[in-house]
Image 1 (spheres, rainbow, N blue to C red):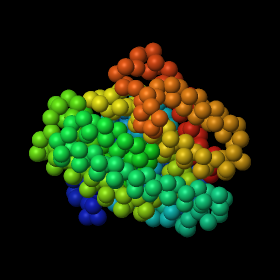
Image 2: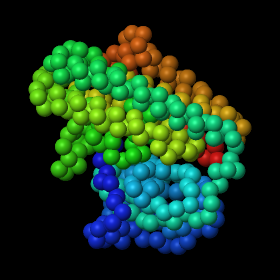
Image 3: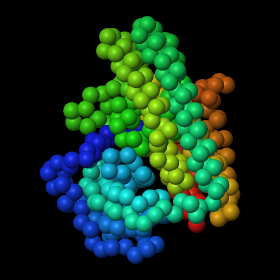
Image 4: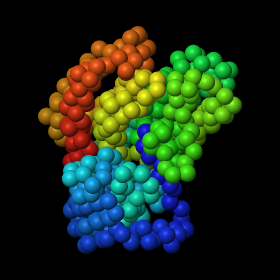
Length: 378
């Protein structure tokens, strides 16, 4: 789940240009140099406006008082790569692959809104042809995996919607968690489009001013907190299926690279740390552990596909990742309540001590996982 971000249109308004002017380009980076990104609560300074095609590295520092998100964006607002939840006073290195063209670097203080942006021009041809062919296979297999997850999600979401439209509260509750698994496994792909996630997976506290609350969590509140299904909920159920079908159709057009896979795996772990472990994600149904497992499975899939190259470039890293994935899955599987992939105990039954154990296992994996992108492009 992420906050909504308005779509950038081709004809940029004067107001948007004013917002962009707060982002200052300091100098041109030399080939191979990282772009220094200094984020604050109202500014976003970058050290370059032009880089050669291929690998680009952002050295990010948040000097603001709010957590921020930094993204590399296509002109139509699709995400090339991103890092969410960069806390005040913290630093992060983001590695991505970019082809020749026009982009923007965006800092989003508070992780809401359009953000403060800087134009970025990528020159020359793409270096992708020189990369290890194993990486091309990894991308192709991951694209199929993402499509398979979307294809499997739609009928499960339809089952959820049908139960709501039938007014069957118990059946709708049972169908809720299964309908989310495919989404949770591949959420970075859905988020890359910019406009689908806000409609399907936004929580009440993630809404922008004037945004109508739709999607899974709006229906979750109706089922568990309000304990009612009315005409509005039935219409929202149909809208959820329609939005997910849109996602299903667009998966094949997603921009997927080895680094976006690696960064996406880390983002899935961040999703766990900031939403699932805290109990904020499924706060009414307490089905957080099913989402938790979906995020971990998706991260592990990306890693396993990239591992043949990563193990060659950084064997110590892959050894650590294997160990930490095993440890996290072992802890998580201790909370299973049945055989299905979504069968877990209600998260409100998990004690603070147990949540700390889960959090520690997530953090132990997140640290080496943050190095995977750099390992696959060495």
